[in-house]
Amino acid sequence: MPTRSASRVTGVGLALAGVSTVAELLRAGDPRAAAPVEPGARIGHRGLRYSDRATQLALAAARDALADAGLIPDDAQRADPGTLTVDGAGVAVVASSNLGNLDTVCETSAAIAGASTDVISPMSLPNASSNVVASAVATRFALRGPNLMLCNGPTSGLDAVHWGAALIGAGRCSRALVVGVEPRNPVVSQLTGIPQDELFDGAVALLLEDATHAAARGVRPLAEIGDYAREADLAACLADMGQATTDPWGVWFAEDPAAAAAGRPSGSGLAGAPRYAFSDVHGHSSGALGVLQCAAAIGWFTSGGTAPALITTGGDGADAVAALALRPAAGTRS
Image (cartoon, rainbow, N blue to C red; front, side, top):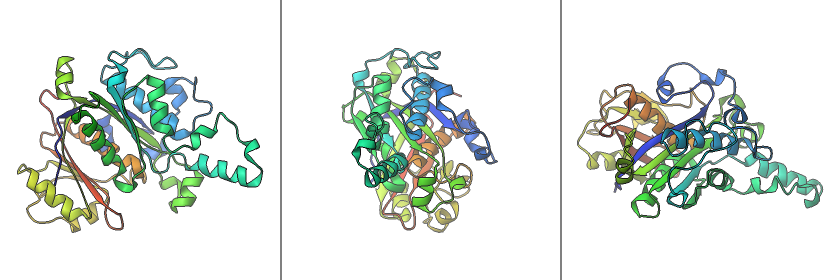
């Protein structure tokens, strides 16, 4: 059964080639032809020397989400992340990346196998930890709430959004910074079998906030986190979401539009709703997909969308499918 949330999205950050606003996520074309994001140019080079690309991208997107939500100064663009305007103990970090540090892990393993641990730099070895993205973001911005790293397959990004909202709902924090990131490199291409130019390279961050706290700050939200469901297949997920709402969906962000259409049960409220899938546009985004889709749904709202957005990840061959409803919130920013 779906679970509900009272969280609002109050900030979005993007570190994607050729994209500067959430509304641009809906445009046609291939932004992968644009120059890759240079995180150092966005947030300064201090502290990035030994960080892998996934971590650097995540830091750039995280900084923009915090600034967009008004939690750090707008001019904190470079080395100094600025002073948090709220208590960092109440801000959680939930990151999602299935492939983020595969290059570091493989290169480290190969170096140890070929020589010994003596050839490994103590400065770079921490990057082999699977939670490096979440911990680096928390350290950089002094976010001392719960810290989670999800590497959960195709549903990982939506799972991360759900767990960020769940932490807020459980009273573990009042805000959660959710980051989805994946890098494009030869190691990821080799291990996934996906050509390198078809891989996603970027990061997306969302700042989730308890509705009461957002209202107390006078923040106009970007969206409201709605129902979430996780099932064995798409049909079961859509059935759950259909039981949770009688409103027609305004738009569907699916992992694969063709598969989604084939799996759509009757009465799902999706007739006539436009559909978007990003693998042909931004590349195969794995653990970043669900967060990317949420940002695109917010772009749809800011472009005039007024009905709920349905977001699904996972499909044929995956161990699960996740679904999330994102709704335009009262007083949504345009």
